[in-house]
Length: 613
Figure: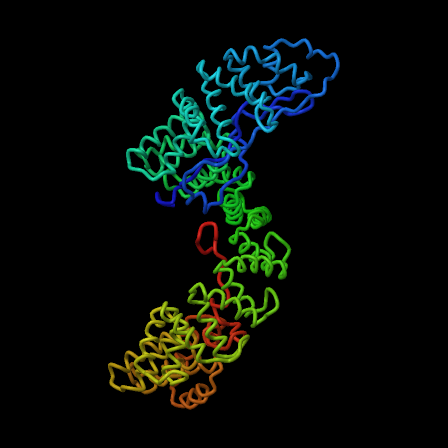
């Protein structure tokens, strides 16, 4: 993760105001800032991309009329004892009207605890004008006597439902007053508002300075935001130690985004030494809090034994939680786990369901993988119509592998009506993106004039592109074109090199041809033992003509040549019999290429980290 990928976030939702207290049998206020309980957590896409701004604040939980509980010990409470119970969030068995009467004199005189407690009881959704006026008057009196919290609460009150008017009208002067007095949440609010409005470097620096003051004042949300700017060096000189310090402070009080950013920083080792075990711990906290990206990465770490002991069962659990939140990567991973029976019972239907869910949401890799699995039919039943459908969906996104596969379906009329012309269109689209298989298929069509005009030059151009990607059929094609057009020793030597490569990878036709060249000394040194060995290998790969020519050549070999040829037969082919068959079957019609090598199914990608396992 580079500097450009660090988060650009708006504020994390918060609670506000006084501690939760109960008057009678009802909650009367939830007005203390509690950034430790986040209402939502951002996905990794939002984490790295969201702009500034202000999130709506939760509304007050207002007091309601309490039913007297007769003569209780609380009836004789003094104001100080009452305030202590309210601050501690304890039940207060006193009617609401009596509490208001007890608190009002001190609150209207500007006593901060009394004013905040009274406001938490009388302001809000009741809509009683007298209550509203009383609460506003109490907060105003405390604010004018220097209470930054009263000024901030008054700003929130005037901002209205969701805090929409916090930065304008009647609310803004009170917010500014609270900020001027060092109120951390007010400083953060002003800072994030300024950062949300495009401005010059000076404005960015001023806003960042406010944010840093809020962070230093203990505002956990500001600590997270400030850390992000310190890491990026935005509006302030980059300061990695200070940024990590803020992140740790915010993470310790359960700011999920801070936990996630700290985990990513330690996981990637960009700004500090990599520490997988500590990163795992922070991912676990963020994942437990519901962050989908943390759940995904945690699952991958369990799979890989990275920062923790390998545990595919735990991995499947966290993948499932991330999938429930719409993570395509998690659905992809679950599809692979169910197909392999790893961490879960093997279940082809479940694998199909998870892959389809990701593919249906437009996940390109899921669409391509689903198409290939439908071709193969060993995880869930083969279905060429479904395979063609998902390759078509992936082709719409420009995927070259899907374009090639869709071209095969059209060309052979499997899962779709046969339409070679349409197939060529998809081969050409894939070839333009240098898909080696598409180049090979098109090269063959140009070599023989199938559907397209015959052109040795175009065939060779396409074959060479694919040969550079180590496709044996393409090298064999180049050799055929060379041998057909020019028999000079230089050209034949070049052809022999292409034949040798294709022969070493198991193509029986190339093995026969290179054997013939050795038997003739054409483009290579005359060597009957090698000639016999290559023909013998080709015969073992099912080439009947090679078997006949081998038997004819055998009569010409000396005993020493015969022994040498038998030894060479065991070493010249550089791949296993299974791999050789895969290369020979590579261009069979879909569904008939089960030995078709790595194009049948890809290794599952570590979707949380973007790399192959």
